[in-house]
Image (cartoon, rainbow, N blue to C red; front, side, top):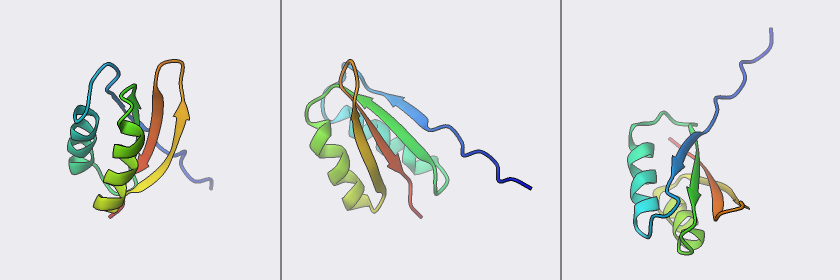
Length: 81
């Protein structure tokens, strides 16, 4: 019997929104999600490149990486615990 496919990431689109909105939206989404949930945050705010990894470290969630997009970046985060 095969394992179920992983759930698609929860997309949080904050394109065009300045700091601190990307972090606020991420924090609210993580608050009600189950452990293991993957989030993809879309942001074109330069500060997100620092803010999101630091927030993950402070809140003990896993920062999985950042990818360049045509507009801004995609940040991937996994909720821990």
